[in-house]
Image (cartoon, rainbow, N blue to C red; front, side):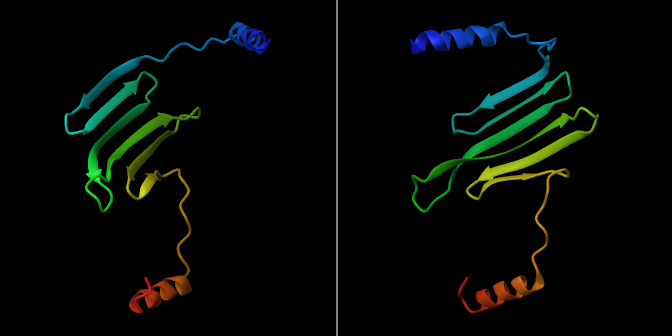
Length: 126
């Protein structure tokens, strides 16, 4: 019975109007995979969207078997109001870090916190 209900929902979803959205053409695409685990790819679509990424294998821990992929890249796209937004990013042992002029940034650290951290570092606590 559950299968019939699931198929009915699927049929309704597929029958729903999809609008006039046409696929966006990919105008360029490149990719490279190397035996050492490094890679790179990029593509650009007809609407101006651009994506690029590259990565390699790196020891990310104390043991030789602590190998991970570190990557960096960027993507950009045009908003409906015509503004091009670009995000540059890095993903490594420190996590995912994205930057872009349109992304929020944390406020500066208060002076008393900067002083406290310096004091803790000087005392050997950090």
